[in-house]
Amino acid sequence: GEGFRVTEAARGGEVMRALSSGDIDLVTLDLTLPDIDGLAVARQIRERSAVPIIMVTGKGDMIDRVVGLEVGADDYIAKPFHLREVLARVRAVLRRAREDRASPPVTPCGSTPPIRFDRWILDRDRRELRETDGTTCPLTTAEFDLLEIFITHANRVLTRNQIMDLLKGNEWSPLDRSIDNLVARLRRKIEVADMAPTLIKTVRGLGYTFTARVDAGP
Figure 1 (cartoon, rainbow, N blue to C red):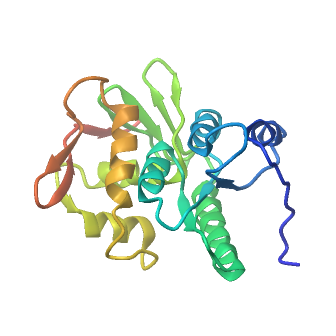
Figure 2 (spheres, rainbow, N blue to C red; figure 1 turned 135 degrees about the vertical axis):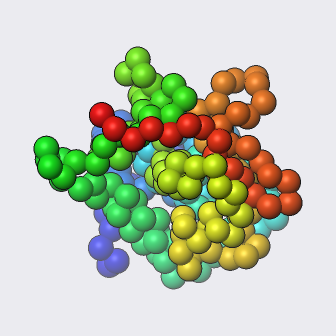
């Protein structure tokens, strides 16, 4: 009665098969599944798709929440929960995803020039990040938005509060520490593995700064 068509999946394997249909707009994922750990399912989903994920966790499962956000979940709901909270979170996540997918029309006069930094090219019209050799790096909605914020504020220190304001507007709590997990996820995708961060640097006691040289143009 809320305007959503729901597909149920009781096991991790069923979740992945449902996703393969390509007709899923959002996944609510309980971390307690009978056949496979829910966090492992979240990782598998994120490797294949940028579909929004809302985790369902136990009231005291703070570690699971943090790990879930690190592997790519967009939000979480703690048990016990009220249906109205679920619907509100689903609508908020879907709204953000729709807004982020609404790319401006690509025309010779109106297209947004790509942005180059380090070995990467950010295509804001297609909302796509790729290496200079053409290899695409899949980003979630939140990861893309965070990278765009860093690029447009390159070489400036941004506090966590400033980043959260730019990412979520009024839809965040001062106690929300998910930005650190989101930064960690983005670093793993754009930085050189097993080396100290060189593109997104932590400014102790303040926040983060994006230090790469940024070039806008074709």
